Length: 387
Image (cartoon, rainbow, N blue to C red; front, top):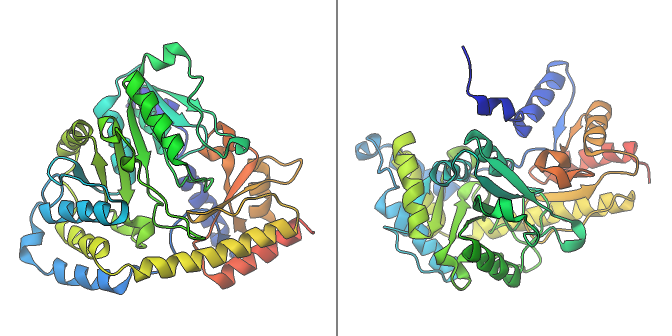
Protein backbone atom coordinates (compact mmCIF):
# COMPACT_ATOMS: atom_id res chain seq x y z
CA UNK A 1 0.00 0.00 0.00
CA UNK A 2 1.07 3.58 -0.60
CA UNK A 3 1.14 6.12 2.19
CA UNK A 4 0.40 9.82 1.85
CA UNK A 5 3.11 11.84 0.13
CA UNK A 6 3.41 14.21 3.09
CA UNK A 7 4.72 11.39 5.28
CA UNK A 8 7.77 11.16 3.05
CA UNK A 9 8.74 14.63 4.25
CA UNK A 10 8.19 14.02 7.96
CA UNK A 11 11.33 13.68 10.04
CA UNK A 12 11.16 11.02 12.78
CA UNK A 13 9.71 12.60 15.92
CA UNK A 14 12.60 13.75 18.09
CA UNK A 15 11.45 12.32 21.40
CA UNK A 16 10.46 8.98 19.91
CA UNK A 17 14.06 8.63 18.72
CA UNK A 18 15.37 9.47 22.18
CA UNK A 19 13.08 6.89 23.76
CA UNK A 20 14.33 4.25 21.33
CA UNK A 21 17.98 4.89 22.23
CA UNK A 22 17.16 4.88 25.93
CA UNK A 23 15.29 1.59 25.75
CA UNK A 24 18.10 -0.06 23.81
CA UNK A 25 20.67 0.87 26.46
CA UNK A 26 18.42 -0.21 29.33
CA UNK A 27 17.93 -3.55 27.60
CA UNK A 28 21.73 -3.96 27.68
CA UNK A 29 21.71 -3.35 31.44
CA UNK A 30 22.96 0.25 31.40
CA UNK A 31 22.01 2.70 34.15
CA UNK A 32 20.58 5.44 31.94
CA UNK A 33 19.72 8.88 33.31
CA UNK A 34 17.47 10.86 31.01
CA UNK A 35 17.65 14.64 30.99
CA UNK A 36 15.95 14.63 27.62
CA UNK A 37 12.18 14.79 27.70
CA UNK A 38 10.41 17.39 29.82
CA UNK A 39 8.14 14.98 31.68
CA UNK A 40 7.73 16.09 35.33
CA UNK A 41 9.03 13.61 37.89
CA UNK A 42 6.74 14.94 40.64
CA UNK A 43 3.23 13.50 40.99
CA UNK A 44 0.04 15.32 40.16
CA UNK A 45 -1.05 17.24 43.31
CA UNK A 46 -3.24 15.16 45.60
CA UNK A 47 -6.32 17.41 45.53
CA UNK A 48 -6.46 17.02 41.73
CA UNK A 49 -6.12 13.24 41.94
CA UNK A 50 -8.85 13.10 44.60
CA UNK A 51 -11.21 15.07 42.37
CA UNK A 52 -10.49 12.66 39.53
CA UNK A 53 -11.32 9.73 41.82
CA UNK A 54 -14.69 11.27 42.59
CA UNK A 55 -15.37 12.33 39.01
CA UNK A 56 -14.60 8.95 37.48
CA UNK A 57 -17.34 7.37 39.61
CA UNK A 58 -20.08 9.70 38.34
CA UNK A 59 -22.13 7.78 35.75
CA UNK A 60 -22.91 10.99 33.87
CA UNK A 61 -19.21 11.31 33.07
CA UNK A 62 -19.13 7.90 31.37
CA UNK A 63 -20.94 9.23 28.31
CA UNK A 64 -19.59 11.24 25.38
CA UNK A 65 -18.18 14.57 26.55
CA UNK A 66 -19.11 17.96 25.13
CA UNK A 67 -17.04 18.38 21.96
CA UNK A 68 -15.85 21.88 22.85
CA UNK A 69 -15.29 21.06 26.51
CA UNK A 70 -17.81 21.05 29.31
CA UNK A 71 -19.29 24.46 30.12
CA UNK A 72 -17.85 24.14 33.64
CA UNK A 73 -14.34 23.47 32.33
CA UNK A 74 -14.48 26.35 29.87
CA UNK A 75 -15.67 28.65 32.65
CA UNK A 76 -12.77 27.47 34.82
CA UNK A 77 -10.32 28.24 32.00
CA UNK A 78 -11.82 31.72 31.65
CA UNK A 79 -11.59 32.20 35.41
CA UNK A 80 -7.93 31.17 35.36
CA UNK A 81 -7.21 33.70 32.60
CA UNK A 82 -8.96 36.44 34.56
CA UNK A 83 -7.19 35.64 37.83
CA UNK A 84 -3.75 34.95 36.36
CA UNK A 85 -3.58 37.59 33.63
CA UNK A 86 -6.55 39.92 33.99
CA UNK A 87 -7.82 38.70 30.60
CA UNK A 88 -11.61 38.61 30.11
CA UNK A 89 -12.90 35.70 28.00
CA UNK A 90 -16.32 34.57 26.85
CA UNK A 91 -16.18 30.84 27.71
CA UNK A 92 -18.78 30.08 25.03
CA UNK A 93 -16.93 31.57 22.07
CA UNK A 94 -13.36 32.26 23.15
CA UNK A 95 -12.33 29.06 24.97
CA UNK A 96 -11.89 25.53 23.61
CA UNK A 97 -10.90 22.37 25.50
CA UNK A 98 -8.00 20.39 24.06
CA UNK A 99 -6.68 16.86 24.48
CA UNK A 100 -3.28 18.35 25.29
CA UNK A 101 -1.89 21.46 23.60
CA UNK A 102 0.12 19.36 21.11
CA UNK A 103 -3.11 18.12 19.59
CA UNK A 104 -4.55 21.63 19.39
CA UNK A 105 -1.44 23.08 17.77
CA UNK A 106 -1.34 20.28 15.19
CA UNK A 107 -5.03 20.64 14.35
CA UNK A 108 -4.74 24.41 13.97
CA UNK A 109 -2.91 23.74 10.71
CA UNK A 110 -5.86 21.71 9.46
CA UNK A 111 -8.16 24.63 10.24
CA UNK A 112 -6.14 27.32 8.43
CA UNK A 113 -3.44 25.91 6.14
CA UNK A 114 -3.90 24.69 2.57
CA UNK A 115 -1.38 22.72 0.48
CA UNK A 116 1.31 25.10 -0.76
CA UNK A 117 0.68 27.68 1.98
CA UNK A 118 3.32 28.75 4.47
CA UNK A 119 3.58 28.56 8.23
CA UNK A 120 6.03 30.89 9.98
CA UNK A 121 7.80 29.02 12.76
CA UNK A 122 10.73 29.88 15.03
CA UNK A 123 14.00 28.36 13.89
CA UNK A 124 14.32 26.89 17.39
CA UNK A 125 10.98 25.60 18.59
CA UNK A 126 8.51 22.85 19.29
CA UNK A 127 8.70 20.43 16.33
CA UNK A 128 4.90 20.31 15.93
CA UNK A 129 4.83 23.87 14.57
CA UNK A 130 6.51 22.72 11.37
CA UNK A 131 5.35 19.10 11.51
CA UNK A 132 1.72 20.18 11.35
CA UNK A 133 2.47 22.14 8.18
CA UNK A 134 4.16 19.15 6.57
CA UNK A 135 1.09 17.01 7.22
CA UNK A 136 -0.97 19.61 5.32
CA UNK A 137 1.48 19.51 2.39
CA UNK A 138 2.40 23.09 3.27
CA UNK A 139 5.76 24.79 3.79
CA UNK A 140 7.54 26.16 6.84
CA UNK A 141 9.55 29.36 6.82
CA UNK A 142 11.88 29.34 9.81
CA UNK A 143 12.21 32.74 11.45
CA UNK A 144 15.79 33.21 12.72
CA UNK A 145 16.38 32.89 16.48
CA UNK A 146 19.79 34.04 17.65
CA UNK A 147 21.25 34.12 21.13
CA UNK A 148 22.46 37.69 20.66
CA UNK A 149 18.83 38.77 20.10
CA UNK A 150 17.63 36.95 23.20
CA UNK A 151 16.24 34.05 21.11
CA UNK A 152 13.32 36.18 19.95
CA UNK A 153 12.06 34.92 16.59
CA UNK A 154 12.88 37.55 13.95
CA UNK A 155 10.00 38.22 11.56
CA UNK A 156 11.43 41.47 10.13
CA UNK A 157 12.89 40.09 6.88
CA UNK A 158 10.44 37.48 5.66
CA UNK A 159 10.37 37.38 1.83
CA UNK A 160 7.29 38.90 0.18
CA UNK A 161 6.40 35.69 -1.67
CA UNK A 162 6.32 33.83 1.64
CA UNK A 163 4.23 36.50 3.35
CA UNK A 164 1.63 36.33 0.60
CA UNK A 165 1.06 32.64 1.37
CA UNK A 166 1.63 32.70 5.14
CA UNK A 167 -1.38 31.66 7.22
CA UNK A 168 -0.07 31.15 10.76
CA UNK A 169 2.85 32.53 12.72
CA UNK A 170 3.88 30.45 15.74
CA UNK A 171 5.77 31.84 18.71
CA UNK A 172 6.08 30.58 22.27
CA UNK A 173 7.37 32.40 25.35
CA UNK A 174 8.58 31.34 27.87
CA UNK A 175 10.29 29.37 25.17
CA UNK A 176 10.82 25.67 24.78
CA UNK A 177 13.68 24.79 24.44
CA UNK A 178 15.74 27.95 25.08
CA UNK A 179 13.97 29.23 28.21
CA UNK A 180 13.91 32.72 26.67
CA UNK A 181 11.20 35.18 27.70
CA UNK A 182 9.58 37.83 25.50
CA UNK A 183 8.95 41.48 26.28
CA UNK A 184 5.63 43.29 25.93
CA UNK A 185 7.18 45.33 23.12
CA UNK A 186 8.01 42.13 21.23
CA UNK A 187 4.44 40.87 21.54
CA UNK A 188 3.11 44.24 20.35
CA UNK A 189 5.35 44.12 17.25
CA UNK A 190 4.25 40.55 16.50
CA UNK A 191 0.57 41.50 16.77
CA UNK A 192 1.05 44.56 14.53
CA UNK A 193 2.91 42.43 11.99
CA UNK A 194 0.24 39.74 11.84
CA UNK A 195 -2.58 42.26 11.58
CA UNK A 196 -0.76 44.00 8.72
CA UNK A 197 -0.32 40.74 6.80
CA UNK A 198 -3.58 39.01 7.77
CA UNK A 199 -1.82 36.16 9.57
CA UNK A 200 -3.10 34.21 12.56
CA UNK A 201 -0.69 34.61 15.49
CA UNK A 202 -0.52 31.43 17.59
CA UNK A 203 1.18 31.81 20.95
CA UNK A 204 2.21 28.65 22.79
CA UNK A 205 2.13 29.49 26.52
CA UNK A 206 2.59 26.03 28.02
CA UNK A 207 5.27 27.16 30.50
CA UNK A 208 3.71 30.37 31.80
CA UNK A 209 3.40 29.11 35.40
CA UNK A 210 6.96 27.76 35.74
CA UNK A 211 8.79 30.99 36.58
CA UNK A 212 11.77 31.91 38.77
CA UNK A 213 13.41 34.89 40.44
CA UNK A 214 10.14 36.80 40.72
CA UNK A 215 9.48 36.73 36.97
CA UNK A 216 5.83 36.68 35.87
CA UNK A 217 5.20 35.29 32.40
CA UNK A 218 2.49 37.22 30.52
CA UNK A 219 -0.32 36.20 28.20
CA UNK A 220 -0.20 37.69 24.72
CA UNK A 221 -3.93 38.34 25.13
CA UNK A 222 -3.07 41.07 27.63
CA UNK A 223 -1.75 43.17 24.77
CA UNK A 224 -3.82 45.70 22.75
CA UNK A 225 -5.62 44.32 19.67
CA UNK A 226 -4.51 40.77 20.49
CA UNK A 227 -8.03 39.36 20.14
CA UNK A 228 -8.09 40.54 16.51
CA UNK A 229 -5.48 37.99 15.41
CA UNK A 230 -4.28 35.81 18.31
CA UNK A 231 -5.01 32.35 19.59
CA UNK A 232 -3.15 31.21 22.70
CA UNK A 233 -2.48 27.67 23.90
CA UNK A 234 -2.32 26.70 27.57
CA UNK A 235 -1.53 23.29 29.02
CA UNK A 236 -1.98 21.81 32.48
CA UNK A 237 0.86 19.38 31.76
CA UNK A 238 3.74 21.34 33.25
CA UNK A 239 1.86 23.66 35.63
CA UNK A 240 0.26 20.78 37.53
CA UNK A 241 2.39 17.72 36.61
CA UNK A 242 -0.39 16.37 34.39
CA UNK A 243 1.45 15.38 31.19
CA UNK A 244 -0.25 11.99 30.98
CA UNK A 245 -3.73 13.39 31.59
CA UNK A 246 -3.78 15.15 28.20
CA UNK A 247 -5.76 18.24 29.08
CA UNK A 248 -5.28 21.81 27.86
CA UNK A 249 -7.20 24.68 26.31
CA UNK A 250 -7.00 27.27 23.57
CA UNK A 251 -8.40 30.76 23.88
CA UNK A 252 -8.54 34.05 22.04
CA UNK A 253 -9.89 35.15 18.67
CA UNK A 254 -13.43 33.73 18.29
CA UNK A 255 -13.03 32.90 14.59
CA UNK A 256 -9.86 30.94 15.27
CA UNK A 257 -11.50 29.14 18.20
CA UNK A 258 -14.53 28.25 16.07
CA UNK A 259 -12.38 26.98 13.19
CA UNK A 260 -10.22 24.83 15.47
CA UNK A 261 -13.36 23.55 17.17
CA UNK A 262 -14.84 22.56 13.81
CA UNK A 263 -11.76 20.48 12.99
CA UNK A 264 -11.82 18.81 16.38
CA UNK A 265 -15.55 18.10 16.22
CA UNK A 266 -14.88 16.07 13.09
CA UNK A 267 -11.71 14.33 14.26
CA UNK A 268 -12.19 13.61 17.97
CA UNK A 269 -14.97 13.40 20.52
CA UNK A 270 -13.44 15.59 23.20
CA UNK A 271 -11.62 14.81 26.44
CA UNK A 272 -13.11 12.52 29.11
CA UNK A 273 -15.32 14.71 31.31
CA UNK A 274 -13.83 13.30 34.50
CA UNK A 275 -10.42 14.60 33.45
CA UNK A 276 -11.98 17.98 32.77
CA UNK A 277 -13.43 18.01 36.28
CA UNK A 278 -10.01 17.21 37.74
CA UNK A 279 -8.60 20.02 35.63
CA UNK A 280 -11.17 22.40 37.12
CA UNK A 281 -9.81 21.50 40.56
CA UNK A 282 -6.32 22.32 39.29
CA UNK A 283 -7.21 25.68 37.74
CA UNK A 284 -9.50 26.95 40.48
CA UNK A 285 -8.02 25.25 43.56
CA UNK A 286 -5.05 26.20 45.75
CA UNK A 287 -1.93 27.16 43.82
CA UNK A 288 0.60 26.44 46.57
CA UNK A 289 1.57 23.28 44.68
CA UNK A 290 2.68 25.37 41.69
CA UNK A 291 4.79 27.69 43.83
CA UNK A 292 6.43 24.76 45.62
CA UNK A 293 7.19 23.08 42.30
CA UNK A 294 8.78 26.26 40.96
CA UNK A 295 11.05 26.38 44.00
CA UNK A 296 12.21 22.84 43.28
CA UNK A 297 12.85 23.58 39.62
CA UNK A 298 14.70 26.78 40.51
CA UNK A 299 17.00 24.84 42.83
CA UNK A 300 17.67 22.30 40.10
CA UNK A 301 18.22 25.06 37.55
CA UNK A 302 20.86 26.62 39.77
CA UNK A 303 22.56 23.26 40.24
CA UNK A 304 22.75 22.64 36.49
CA UNK A 305 23.81 26.16 35.55
CA UNK A 306 26.49 26.35 38.25
CA UNK A 307 27.87 22.94 37.31
CA UNK A 308 27.97 23.71 33.60
CA UNK A 309 29.67 27.04 34.15
CA UNK A 310 32.22 25.43 36.48
CA UNK A 311 33.43 23.22 33.63
CA UNK A 312 33.38 25.98 31.03
CA UNK A 313 30.07 25.23 29.33
CA UNK A 314 28.24 28.41 28.32
CA UNK A 315 24.60 28.73 29.37
CA UNK A 316 22.11 31.29 30.65
CA UNK A 317 20.05 30.78 33.80
CA UNK A 318 16.48 30.85 32.46
CA UNK A 319 13.76 32.85 34.21
CA UNK A 320 11.15 30.25 33.26
CA UNK A 321 10.51 26.72 31.88
CA UNK A 322 11.91 23.40 33.02
CA UNK A 323 14.99 23.45 30.78
CA UNK A 324 18.53 24.73 30.58
CA UNK A 325 19.80 25.53 27.08
CA UNK A 326 23.56 25.21 26.79
CA UNK A 327 26.24 25.51 24.14
CA UNK A 328 28.12 22.34 23.25
CA UNK A 329 31.91 22.29 23.77
CA UNK A 330 34.12 23.65 21.01
CA UNK A 331 34.62 21.18 18.21
CA UNK A 332 31.35 19.35 18.84
CA UNK A 333 27.98 19.46 17.10
CA UNK A 334 24.68 19.06 18.89
CA UNK A 335 24.38 15.50 17.62
CA UNK A 336 27.98 14.47 18.24
CA UNK A 337 28.01 15.75 21.80
CA UNK A 338 24.62 14.26 22.70
CA UNK A 339 25.72 10.94 21.22
CA UNK A 340 29.05 11.01 23.07
CA UNK A 341 27.30 11.80 26.33
CA UNK A 342 24.86 8.96 25.81
CA UNK A 343 27.45 6.36 24.80
CA UNK A 344 30.17 7.26 27.31
CA UNK A 345 28.15 8.32 30.37
CA UNK A 346 24.66 6.91 29.68
CA UNK A 347 23.13 10.36 30.18
CA UNK A 348 20.51 11.53 27.69
CA UNK A 349 20.28 15.17 26.65
CA UNK A 350 18.37 16.55 23.69
CA UNK A 351 20.42 17.78 20.71
CA UNK A 352 19.48 21.34 19.88
CA UNK A 353 19.30 20.80 16.12
CA UNK A 354 16.22 18.66 16.73
CA UNK A 355 14.33 21.88 17.42
CA UNK A 356 15.24 23.58 14.15
CA UNK A 357 18.17 24.92 12.14
CA UNK A 358 19.32 27.55 14.66
CA UNK A 359 19.39 24.95 17.42
CA UNK A 360 22.65 23.57 16.08
CA UNK A 361 25.47 23.98 18.56
CA UNK A 362 23.28 23.61 21.64
CA UNK A 363 21.78 20.93 23.88
CA UNK A 364 18.69 21.04 26.08
CA UNK A 365 18.82 19.68 29.62
CA UNK A 366 15.53 18.93 31.35
CA UNK A 367 15.10 19.59 35.08
CA UNK A 368 12.43 16.91 35.49
CA UNK A 369 14.44 14.43 37.53
CA UNK A 370 15.00 14.13 41.25
CA UNK A 371 17.96 15.94 42.79
CA UNK A 372 20.06 12.85 43.48
CA UNK A 373 19.83 11.52 39.94
CA UNK A 374 20.37 15.01 38.52
CA UNK A 375 23.53 15.36 40.62
CA UNK A 376 24.73 11.94 39.43
CA UNK A 377 24.12 12.93 35.79
CA UNK A 378 26.09 16.14 36.24
CA UNK A 379 28.98 14.23 37.84
CA UNK A 380 29.04 11.96 34.80
CA UNK A 381 29.03 15.02 32.56
CA UNK A 382 32.10 16.34 34.38
CA UNK A 383 34.04 13.22 33.43
CA UNK A 384 33.42 14.04 29.77
CA UNK A 385 34.40 17.71 30.14
CA UNK A 386 36.92 17.99 32.95
CA UNK A 387 37.20 21.53 34.33
